[in-house]
Each structure stands twice: as C-alpha cells, then as structure tokens.
Image (cartoon, rainbow, N blue to C red; front, side):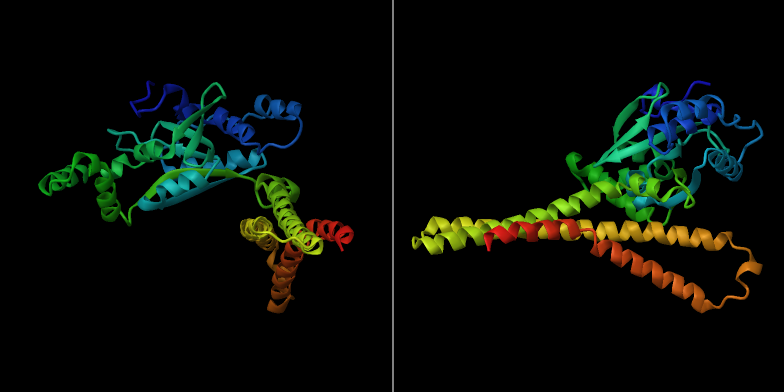
Length: 341
C-alpha cells in the first residue's frame, strides 16, 4: 500500500504491517535494550515479535497487542493521550514513542501508517527511518500533521474570520494557531504509545536511562566550581590587603568572582531539584509496582501504618541520597581551603 501524502519523507512512514519489526528497532536505537551487541542481534532475529494479526481493527486491540509485544522484550508500552494545546509538549517528552498518522478518507479509527519517535532535543525530533537511521524534524511540523483532522472542520471558518478582521498575511499563521487553540482547548489527541522500561527493570538501568549519572556529575562540578570561586576570591582579596596596595582593579576582579558564584549556585540548585524529582519518581514507581504485585492474603494482616512507614522510608532515602550527592565537592573544597588558611 502506498502511503498518502503526509508532507514527510517516505522512509520515515512505516506501514502497520511492519510494526513487529519496528518495535525492536525502536528499542535498540533508544538504548532500552541492555546487554551486549550479540544479545541485541539475537533479540531482533530470534525473538522478533509475531506480526500484527489481520483482524485488529480497533485502538483497544492494537493497544493490547502492543502491550503483549513489549512484555516479550522486557519493556512496557503505555498508551497516552493529551489535549490539543499540549500536543507539542507531549511530542517533546514522550520519547521513545509510536505515533499513528491520521489517514483522511478512512472511517476506521485505526489507520495504516505510523512514525517512530526516537528522541528529541530542544525543538527538534528524531524520527526512525526504515533503514535504521534518524531523520530530524521540527516538532511543529509533526504536530501539524497529527492534529490536522481536528483542525480541518474549523479551518474554513477561522480563515474567513481572519479575512474579515483584516489580519496581515505575516501574522495570520500565528493568529490562526491561537484561535484554533481556544476552539479546541478541550479536544483529546490519541494515537500515541510510549515505550519505556518497566518499574521492575534494573534500577541502575533506569537511573542511566534518566541520565542520572550525567546530572550527578553536573551537580558535583557546579558545586565544586562555586566553592573554588569563593576560595579564589577570598585568597585574592586577602593577598591584596596583606600586600598593602588595594586598587580599584583588585576590587573589580574580586566582585566579578563573587558575582560568578551566583549562576553556579543557581545551576547547582536546579540540578539538585531535578535529581531529587527523578530519583523520587523512580523509587515511588518501584514501590507502587511492588505493592500491586502483592496478593491480598499477603497484606491482609498488615495495617495502614506499615505502608505509611514504607513511604516515609522512601522519602528519607531520597533526602539522604540528595544530601550526599554534593559531598565529594564539599570535601574537596575543604581540602583546597587548608593551604589557603
């Protein structure tokens, strides 16, 4: 079947019949598959999911097949939907994901084509091509394609309205988007499935997937940089005063060093908040997953205080982990301050 015109390259448009081949490739390019390269090759060749049955005609049946397929790979496929105004934010945060393309002229809710969203950076999406390479696309272009069916009934009315109020041609696109956003504020956009690690996966793999080590290194570096700047400024002003010659340039350099500490502290606080949020989310997801796996006979003799205690222990563990995250930088800065005393 020839794909319709989506204003996209043909290589990034996958037919629904190739879904069983696309999901393992998406997991591999998204670094969701752990293990050696040989193991990933065996997964794609020996454990390739079965093709999508021909009798799948609804979104519910497709979602059930996707969930079963992802479980065979040790992953989790979650269907998500969002409102029309938040569609662009979903595309930037839902990676990796599978997105159904709207097919005009089809009465069925299940279309025949989709795209694979591997990752995003700033306002650019990376789509998976059929040869395994990546195609970069601005997020607003894919968003316009996904919501065009919702906008189609309203576009003639909005265009007529813009002509009546004499909106300049340069501003029409921006005004049209704002008007459609108001009209479709409550509309729901479906057809998105997120591929992710299950809560039962390796905790270290989840931390690495959330880029926790990179953010931790950034926190340590920012804290260390702030301490070094304070020590340098203190050393500089002390040395200048002891030499008995204090000039305007010395004070300017000292003030510049102290002002540079401010953005370092702001970066450190931002990284610490992000680490605390992501670390807490992972811990709570694992706790909730473990609770849902318990059988009623295993917990019927335990009161509510037992589970409240578990939640409090999780919070204490999260706070303790964040308080020790910048410990190396603090200890190193104290070691550096000894020669200056």
